[in-house]
Each structure stands twice: as structure tokens, then as C-alpha cells.
Image (cartoon, rainbow, N blue to C red; front, top):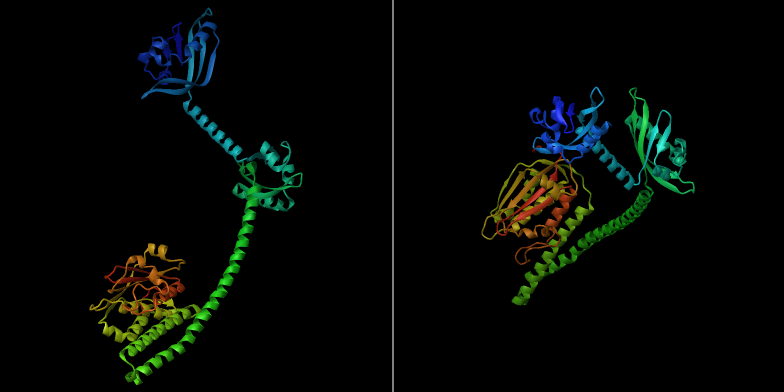
Length: 500
């Protein structure tokens, strides 16, 4: 509060709150004309208000009026409620103005934020074409927006019962269930069909919130409604299309499965039937070389040796094809399998070749895994055979078999479907190696990185390894450099990590 005296509005008296509001200390304002002590308010329109009160005696009141006043760091716009009232002498003459002012900056800013939020909400509602409604649950009175009435195809002034009866009879239960749930959770949400007066059916989505009084009685419901007919029709059409595609895919899968089964049977039968002619070719080649070598010149003998070598390679390929077909065709029992025993048996089977290659084998104690023993034997047999076959000339073979930690990246990068736990085995040799760019190619059937004259093989062994680990829901991959050996990594599911 303060009093301004005379036509120059000299600050005669003011309380501390007024000095705080004006942003100046008392010594800069008291006994000075207002516009001299507070030049910041000049040209902001306040002189006009003061002059009118001083000359006419008419009280001036303002609410939330913006005014720029000095504050720490410079001038700042604040908002003020104030009253200018003429100060009268005993004879009724006006000698000054009494001012009562209150800063309401925080309230004004809060109000503006609320108004902005309401405006954003209004624009959002309008852009989404939402209908809004409010229901007094004690009186059942509804206040609905124009869009709400359009969505339900009723008059805007209709009572609540008319909105309810617009809902399809078959969806009334859905609405009732949603309301019953909302009295517990406070949140109302349901989709229902609305039957228009012309018989056309529309889909509507209703969402809202129930508010309760101090006695926990539901008293008010606020909500929105949206016409979702287009979305629903699109969803139904999409579902129908997905169902059709799924049925087509199922038929195609059945057909493909049948073709695969027939192909597997053909491969097995053809491979099996081809062995007998090959045996005869090999037998007669051996017979000619042993019993009729005197009648053959060196060129003829060389031809027979080439025939025998080709027949031998063909025999190996057929054997590998039979093994591959066997893994696909035969379903075997998964049982606890001791990998140590598997590796020991393979070392015994390859004992002669291991001695010829002067091979040394270093290995960790392996765990017991749930697997098909025959397939585990084939898996490790192929890895051992490759390590012994693709060795460097004049360099004793060294094979290292280790259990290594399973990394998260292993699971993410190499598994198509996951089990609960895994073991990871690193199988390393010191052979000729290969370029890393071929790391995927080596697991394809009949893919070879070297000529037949350099290294024997059919190109099926690692493809069979891949098939076996995939059948066990595991993975296999390789890392290598030319001349620095190769490392094969195996991920195998394990129900038990206890070592045998």
C-alpha cells in the first residue's frame, strides 16, 4: 500500500511490500515524484490511469495487468492486481491517490499454462475428431459435445439412455462389463458397434475415467468417444488376408515337406543303389591290375588307376550322402551323452592316421550333454578328420579342444532358437587354414576350397556338422587365417554343466 500526493504523484508513504513490488529501496522512492524515482514505468500507460483518478475521483481497478519493473538482473515483466482510489481531504478535494497492489505473477503464469494446456487438448480432440462427454453419475445427466452426438447419431441434447440404446444389442454386455470394471479401476474403455438410424453400423471406441467422492461413491464420469469404423474394417480385412496367406503358407509347407520327404527317400535309395555298381567297378579294376597287368602297357595301367581313384572318391561321396540323409531321415533318442567318451572313441578309430600325422591332442574335460550319441560321434569325427586332412606338409598336427565361456554375442549372432543354457567348445588345429571370407561357404554341401588333387574329400562333412548342431538347437562357426590353422566353435544346449 502507498499514497501518492499531488499532481506529480509524490510517494508520501509506502509499506515494505510496496517497495518490494516496485523493485526499489525506500530511499530511492520516498518524497519523490513516482516517475522520477521509478522511470521504468514511464510510457507503460499508468500516467493515464493516475490522471483519470486524480481528476475525476473514479476508482481504477486492474487484475493481472503486466508491468515492467526493476528486478535483479534487469527489468522484468510481472503481473499485478491493483486499485487506484482518490485520497480525499476533509472538504472533499482530491489531494492524492491511495494505491493497493498485489503481485500475482505466479498465478497468472499458472493460469496461462492451464489455458495453453486446455487449448492443446482442445486442438488434439478436434484433430482426432473425438467426441467428449461428462456424466453426473448421481443424476445420470449427460453433457455431450456436438461430435459426440454425431458419433452416436443422436441429438446433442438427448439424455444418457438414448446414447446407450444406440449401441448394438449384442455389444451391450461389453459396455456393462467395462463399466463394472471401471468402478474398480476408475478407467473406462471398450469398443462397441453403434447402429445409426439408417441401419448402418459403425464401430466406436469409448474411453473415460470415473471420479469418486470422499465416501468412495462414483459421482462423475469424463470421457471421449471416437469413430473407429475405418480402422476396424482395415483390421478385419488385414486379418482375413493374413488368414488366407497363412493357409496358403501352410499348404505350401505341407507340399514342400512332402517333396523333401520324397527327395530324402530318393537320395537315400539312389545312394544305396549306386554302391553296388561302384563296388563292381572297383573290383574289376583291382582284378585287371592284379591278374592282367602284363597285358597292359603303362598308359593302360594309368587309366585303370584313374578309374579306381574316381570310383573310390565316388564311394566316399555316397557314404557321406548316406550319412547326411540318415541324419535327416532317422529320428533318434536324445540321451545324456558323455563327450569325453565320444572323443576317446574317435581317437581310437583314427589311431593309425593320428600316428602317421604325428598328431598331438590337448583337451579339457568335457561335460555331459543331452544329445543323440551317434550324431555327436559323427560331428567330432568330421572335425578330427578335417584337422588331420588339411595339415601343413612337414608340420606335426596339433589339435586343441577347449571349453570356453559363452558370450552374449554368441547367442545373439548364431542361434535361431534358444535353449536355457549352453556350453561352448573351441576345436582348433594348426593346419593350412583358409580366408575368413569363406567361413560360411565351408558349411555348404559340396563346397570345397581346394582341388581334389591337393586334398581328398567330398565337401559334405562340414555340411553334415551344421545339420547336426542345428538339429540339437545349437550352432557352429569357424575362424581362420591362411597358414595359421582353423578354429571351429560349437554351441550345444546343456541341461547339466557338471563334468563327467
